Length: 397
View 1 (cartoon, rainbow, N blue to C red):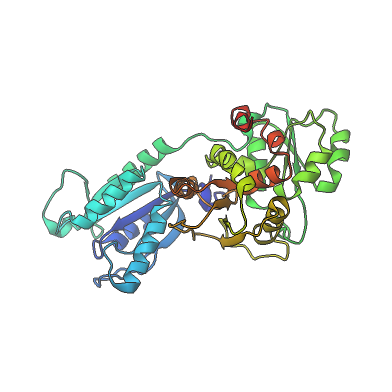
View 2 (view 1 turned 90 degrees about the horizontal axis):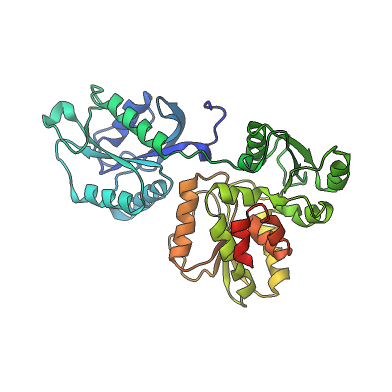
């Protein structure tokens, strides 16, 4: 896929980490062949994480992240370190840049340990080989000035990322060639003008890649469209917001699920989301629910995250709940006082970041579920929506 075709959530994320003045930004510029980051001899020149989506040969479509120095100090320095940690949580590959004139430091060892704890593949790079006069055997010796070692670094990064990539499908592995999938896509005030949202686009593409066909309808035209088809659709996939209407209009013999549930499976946390959903039935007055969006779209009057899900929660639980909201790249590292996390499908986040959020919640003993699972559960149709995943559905019996 080319630069214009690949969303950031589907790109490999490569982060460059290290101490201030180790030459991270210079190495990033040498790797990308662009003046992506400002470079100077002043410590702490990079004050915030810099992201760049690009095509990096031979690795393919990637997001390059240049991070502030991890040894930054003071109040603002700690804020910058926090941004570095946010970048780390979404990294598919970390590059540890060490000043070759000084060698390893305790800060470098701390970063390396964090990579290992998070199971993040990493490459150690010793920069400034043109002036250090030293050659290190436990990493790649590079010079951002002369270009020494840069090609080797890019080749190694590509080899690691190609080895990490899995041939995962959103829906294609559930289909046979010639199948038809009916997609239920409501067009309301929250729908973007003139386009489909990312999960809908990705599902359509994966259906076509499987040699199947996609038919898109609004929620008021489901039954008529099914009746007009020569053979019943192999599956109906609905926007979670109209789950109830899709359930009512889809004959019992036709599998039904949602875009959000498919995305949870694609991102690798559907089983956790299903296991966590029972917590909704245990909520008590005063409990706190954290509702998380992976994107930062403009909030509409009937927004799903801040309006519809809170309304469904209130109607289902009949409890007075405390609600908290996050969006975009923000996600709390401390979940003290949170009784349930309900996350969006995660289409705008790469798999590693969604997995980090899930593991943060599970590690803190906080149930973690997602929009599609929660809506299907509260509308009494979760078992039906999971029929295409019998192993996961069995957890509800």
